Length: 368
Image 1 (cartoon, rainbow, N blue to C red):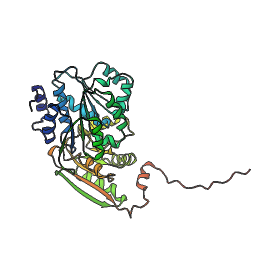
Image 2 (cartoon, one colour):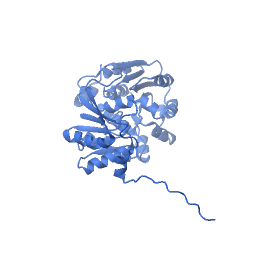
Image 3 (cartoon, helix red, strand yellow):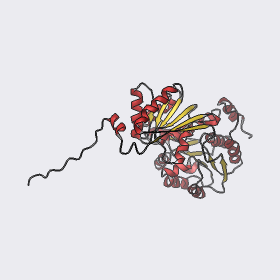
Image 4 (cartoon, rainbow, N blue to C red):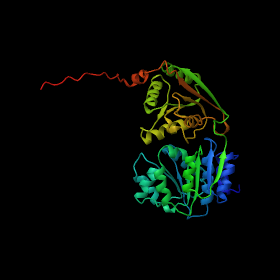
């Protein structure tokens, strides 16, 4: 690919010995000056694809700056970490900004200068309005997880950001799907993109799937049985709601099965610590809502358990895509509830919070 020696040195230290298909196709296209619109499955190495291209393009060009937009805080932090590793033999300032904590430190960091900025859209606009960052300086823009941006309602924010970045820019879009709405977004922001599609729109071949049909009252017992039968595996358990995640986390820990939990109501410091413990093998079980289903790369996740089914096929694919990454094998188990048996039953979730069902008390008129 004609990459610089410093980049090759960094990739070697990361043990990136062979390019994945998306990297083989995306990096040369971007380095030749093309805008790209990319569909690829999760776990195929697309973060490194645009990260390598950014570092190579900025090397030796002090006036160039790159902006990567991400839909979630966790994904933004992951992207920043990976680009820093790729750029470890260059003198580049690489920062990440996201909501959920104070602005002061981010403003101070940005005023010292930045070469590559990874940001969530809302936070970036806050910083722009405070004049901590000048969006017109960015002439290389990546829209990562564009389909997720669409789902989360970020398009108005993206419109505002894209109207302020340099008009003489390169723009690249990455998405797990290229639905009609994604093409509509691309037509507004990207000039003559090269469309690159990698892989099929289905789960990767290395993931073995199993469905278990059972009553709701049987789910927790089956879950603990599976976890105890695989005492060394790294496992992610997906629940449908924050309440379910808290319920599972408490019950597992009460039974001596150490687990971490992550969902949108937890503080950013708590979420960061939980993810770091999981990534660095201080805990092997993570219970999460779909906030963790996209874009988070954790090495060697052996098993995904869908305690609750995903709301749609796309979310299901992203959940199970946390395993079987980069050519490794993995397994996904989905609990499918017997709806007839479980009709109207929510008792197991109420028990853990000690929440009694509400009774209707007739209203007695006060005497006049």
